[in-house]
Length: 299
Image 1 (spheres, helix red, strand yellow):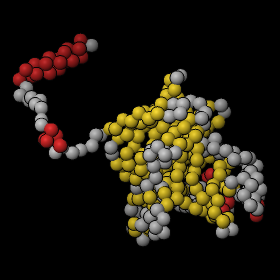
Image 2 (cartoon, rainbow, N blue to C red; image 1 turned 90 degrees about the vertical axis):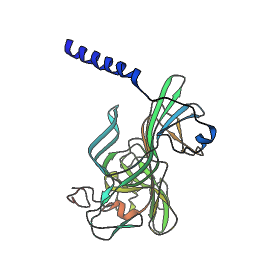
Image 3 (cartoon, helix red, strand yellow; image 1 turned 90 degrees about the horizontal axis):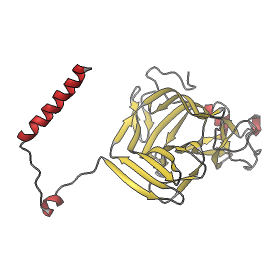
Image 4 (cartoon, helix red, strand yellow; image 1 turned 180 degrees about the horizontal axis):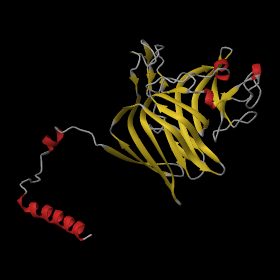
C-alpha cells in the first residue's frame, strides 16, 4: 500500500513540478478572429419544458454505422413478466446474394449492410418527485432490426395490407387477447377492422394476427415517397424507461409527443407494409445477420 501511495505522490509532484516551466499562455482573440472559427460541440445539452415534466437532452455529435448481434435481451423483468424479451437481436445485416439491394444501394454477397445512427442522445425526465424516466435514441436512424421477440412493450409503426386495403399494425397480448402496447406477444390488424374478428385471432381464414416471432426482420426508417426503394432517416427510434404512466416524450423537433406508460417502451418507426397472409402463415423472413448464413427462419 505504501508503494502505491508513494507512486501517486511522485506523479502529483511531477505534474506540479512541470507547471512553472510551461510556456503556453492563454491570450484573448479579437471578435473578427472569433468569427473565422467554425466547428460543432461534441455534446449538446438542451433543457426542454413539458406539461408535467422537465426534460434534459444530451446529444453527441457523432455518426455510427454498425452491425451488432446480441444473443439474449431481457429488459423490465418485474411482476412476473418481461417488458421486452428477445433472442438473437441484430442491428444491420449481410447481403445474402450478389445484386441484393437495400436503400437503393446494390451489394455483393457477404457485404455488410450497416445500421446507420446519427447523433445519439440520452434524455432525462424529472418532476417534483425526482427522476421520472429516461430514454436513449438517435436523432436520425435507419437500417434493419432482426430478432426472435416473445414479449414487446412499445410501438411498431408497421402497415398491414389485407385484400388491397392498408391498415395500421396493432400489438396484442396473446391469442384472443385485446390490443396492447405492454408485453405484447402478437401483431396484426387493429381490432374491428372490416371482415376481421375483434382481438387477436389466429384461426385459418379468420386470422388477423401472428406471433411476434413471425416478424423476424424489420426496417427502421421512413418512406421517402420516391418509389425507388430508398429509406429515409427517422428521428423516432428510441427506448424509454418510465417510473410512472403518462410520460410524454417529445419528438426531436418538438412538434409532437408520444404518451407512454410505466416500464419499458420501445418505439420502432418503419416504412414496411406487410401482407397479412404472409405474416400469419410463414412469417417475414429473417435477413442474414451472421457470417455463416443461418437461414431465413432464424436457426
